Length: 497
Image (tube, rainbow, N blue to C red; front, side, top):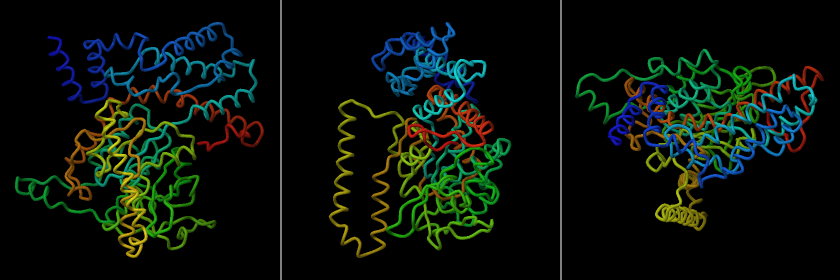
């Protein structure tokens, strides 16, 4: 009876028509499996529940006594997303929905304390002191970003992921993408809230009519009609406004970062955005990021000059698919925006079969597998170094070898990694038009793959989602009062947005 009930609830989750249906079935599953009891109990060897309980009780007591100065002092001791190990992925694998109630209560209490101190009615703390605190708190806690991988026409999976996050108001304001991820991310970042609904409708997205008849379906699955660079440009003209990165950010407040790789040797990859390349036009940037060598021609980027005219960016230099050099630009996002929490939508066709969306395992077999993988990577890099000079004699071989090494040495995971449930996809269709039926299926798969991670994302981003608007409001008030932006200290200086 017990097993039968669990099986029915698992089926209900698999067949849920919406996130709310999935959530209800997941909560019931936790009740039946006894995971709900596990969530109520503080104890677990996975985190330091004693220190978190102590700090939670202390913050509650300060707020109850209206000790605002004491509350500020306590928060100044540090606001951390992984305090006492509470961000461990293992704490989100026991239950189907959520984690320890102690962790959720602690995050809620921090949120309430921040909102309380931000209230102008709390006047025992001066404006400048509050501003300084919120700057440092935001800097120390960090921010979240959504990184979307290269994908070919699996990009519709990204659309499903974005839609699931958007519907729950959890879509980060910092997004990066390469290849197909750049296309989806740029449309999302340049589109207003009202315009976003269009890209979540499979009927509105570019595709081809579903084949009718058994013979046509068989032919379509074997001989796929490949997408051309001209087709990508037509999609960009239809869905992406002809704006620069800076204009896009001013339009929506969302930061888009597009990875591009140099077509020439001895050049470095670029991460294009409103800070590093504000005047570059997004359409050409996305077209370059989707330019897979051997399939699409390299692209010359375009930028707006000081007279508002379109001109080439860095002369005639050409750029190609960004996933070849930096599929997931985590380090650059950390440097630019203070990002330290990464949500990854991973559909890179080279990577999907090897994806494990959980964190690194510590059992003996897994550790041996990791060791063998690391050893193989080291030998490949050593071999490339040994044969570097002979390889350089043939430019085409050198370019191919450098691209292969870049793919091998990259990291393809985040703090939370969302990947297709099906590991194998028809390689013939990676650069082929998708039918309406396939588009709808990929979007649905992206949404369903995101649902089990929604609550974890909500909990782990709640503090930063609270801090960001508070800090923006205080910085805007500073400008209105003093006519200039607030001066950041060396400890708090970082990109704002």
